[in-house]
Amino acid sequence: MAVDSILSSPLGPPACEKDAKKLQFIEEMTRYADSVQERVLAEILSTNSHTEYIKNFNFDGAVDRETFKSKIPIVTYEDLQPLIQRIANGDRSPILSAHPVSEFLTSSGTSAGERKLMPTIKEELDRRQLLYSLLMPVMNLYVKGLDKGKGLYFLFVKSETKTPGGLLARPVLTSYYKSDHFKTRPYDPYNVYTSPNEAILCADSFQSMYTQMLCGLYEREQVLRVGAVFASGLLRAIRFLQLNWPQLAQDIQTGSLNPKVTDPAIRECMTEVLRPDPDLAEFIAKECAKENWEGIITRIWPNTKYLDVIVTGAMAQYIPTLDYYSGGLPKACTMYASSECYFGLNLNPMCKPSEVSYTIMPNMAYFEFLPHEPNSVGVARDSPPQLVDLVDVEIGKEYELVITTYAGLYRYKVGDILRVTGFHNSAPQFHFVRRKNVLLSIDSDKTDEAELQTAVENASILLRDFNASVVEYTSYADTKTIPGHYVIYWELLVKDLTNSPSNDVLNQCCLAMEESLNSVYRQCRVADNSIGPLEIRVVKNGTFEELMDYAISRGASINQYKVPRCVSFTPIMELLDSRVVSTHFSPSPPQWTPERRR
Ligand code: AMP
Image (tube, rainbow, N blue to C red; front, side, top):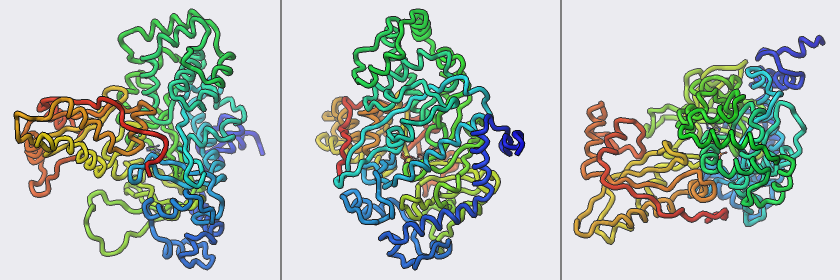
C-alpha cells in the first residue's frame, strides 16, 4: 500500500502512522456500528451465560438482541444493590460477571449517601486504555506540533478503601493512574506530561498539587496544553497558584523543595527537576503579584494552544472563569466516560463548548436508549417504553443512556440524558444534556432534591428550641469564587421575636446541612477542598411569595406553581439577594473519612 493511502483518513490526514491506525479503527467501529454492537452483546451474553444474574432469566444460551430485550429488565443501581453488597462482602461466585471482580469503582453518583460501588473486571482496563489511545490521534488532526512540547495536566489519585470482603474500592481514575497501563506507559512524543508519576500518585493533595505546579512552572516554555479532568480541577490549580506562588517562586529561586513536601518518592524524583533559576523565579513572582489575574494561564504558559478540560454538563458553569484566566483559549472536551463504562469521544475537540458532541464507540459496551420526553414527568404511559438501539436513535431527540457492560451490568440506567446531534458514519453523536436528578453540583458532587430536603429538615431541628422553623427554601451553586459553595436561602418563621435563633445557631445549621449531605460532597469539602463552606442566607418574610408572584407574572400557572429548589436565573437571584437579612457559614468542615458509613 502507498504511504499516502496509509496516511489518509476520512477524519483528516493523520499526524503519523500510529495515528492512522487509530483513526482507521474509529472509522471501522463507527461504520459498522450495528454489527459491532451485535457482536459485543453476543460476547457479553455468551461469556456471562452462567452467572447467577443471567441464569435467573432462563436464556438457554441465547445471545441475540430479541431474547435479551424480552427477558432482561431495565434496572437502576438500587435494583442491583443487594447483589453488589454480596460481592463486596466477599462472595466470589459468578454473580454478575463470569470474570472475577478485580475491584470496585466508586462513582460520584451516590446511593443512600455513599458512592455507588461498580464492580469491574481486569480486562476493562484495556478497554479504557483503548479509548484513551484514540484521543491524541483525533486532537492531532486539529492542533499541529503537539509532539514538540508537553502537557501540564493536574491529575490526582483519591483515597481508597477495602470492602468487608477485601476488594479495593476507589474512583476509576485512581484505579487507572495506579495501573501499570498508566505507570509504565511507553514513551509517546504526543503524550508527554510535565507531572512526574510520583506526584500524580501521591495521595496527599497538597504535596501532589504543589509538585505538579512546580514542574509546570519550570517547564513553562514547553507547555503546549494545560488541563485537568474537569474544569473545576483546573480552577482549583489556579487558586492553588494564587495561594502558594511565593513559596513556589522561592523554591525555583533556590533550587530546593518546600519542606512541606515530605513524600520520599517525590523528593527523590524532584532532584532531577530542581535547579536554581532566579530569572524564572522573578518572572513568576512578578506575574503572580499583579492584582489582575486575567489571562494568567497564557502569561505563565505562553505557548498553550488549548485547555484540555471537560466543560460540558454541570461544568459549563465554569466557562466564563476559565475564559477569564486563559484569555479565551479553546477548551477541548475530549471524552465522555463514567465508572460504569467509558462511552466515547469528541471527534471535533476544538469546537465551541456549546457544540460539543460525543461519539459513542460501539465496541465499549452494548448501548440502548430510553426515549426521554422532557415534559412527560408523571404522565401515565399505556405501554412500557421501547428502548432504541445505538444506530436507531433519531437526530434532535433526547434519550436516557442504558448500558450492558462486559463487567456485568445488564440494561443499567446510567442516569445521563443525551440529545442526538448527528452521526459519524452510522454511530450517533450526542450532546450531553444533563444528569437526572442533580440539583446542585460544584465539583464531582451531585446533590439531588431529596438530599437537600433531608439536609434542611435535619438542620431545622436546631431551630426547635427557638420555636422557629423554615417555611421555604431554595438553593444556588455559587461558583463566583474558587472554590464554589452551596448557598441555601431560608425564609424563617420565628414565633417569639425575643428568642430568635442567634448567628451562632444559624452557623450550626449550615454545618448540620453539610453533615447530612452525601459522602462525595463531604469528601470535596474535607479532603479535596474543592467546595467552600455552605452558606445560609436568611431572607425577609414574604420573599418566597414574591418569588411566586414573579413566576406567575412570567406565565406560570398558580395551581401548578412549586417553589424551585434550585435557582440560577439572574432576576430571581437579584430578587432573593435584595431580601437577605443575614448570612451564615459553616464554622468547620463536616465529618468525612474514606470509610463508608454503611
Ligand atoms: P462517575 O460515575 O463519578 O465516574 O461520573 C460519571 C458521570 O460524569 C457521567 O455519567 C456523566 O454524568 C458525567 N460526565 C462524564 N463525562 C462527561 C462529559 N464529558 N460531559 C459531561 N458530563 C460528563
